[in-house]
Amino acid sequence: MAVPPDWKANQFLPFQFEDPKGSSSAMLVNETNGSAGPWSDAVIQAFKPEKVVENSARRVFLIDRPTSFLNQTTRSWSVWAPAAKGNCHLTVALKKGADEDLLRKVVDTLSRK
Image (cartoon, rainbow, N blue to C red):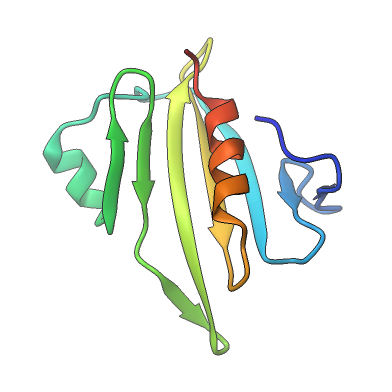
């Protein structure tokens, strides 16, 4: 995963990066079990996504339902892509003012071509 150079790593979670405005973050973890995709309809529905952007061998990309906490709504994107062992799981959190075009570019850096 690649993020813009002005993003900073979280001091407590070095695998999470945040944009300078605090409107978005990206967290990447390796999962050694499971497959990156494609997934069955039953597996996808277990996540209850708002939208399925992609479900292929290249990646699974779900747009999660918005959540609210302390009067702030956050939307999340969840992406899984193949890794050498298991898969990489990227979670992108978008708050008000997040640059979705930029975040789509971050997501695209995860996927193998």
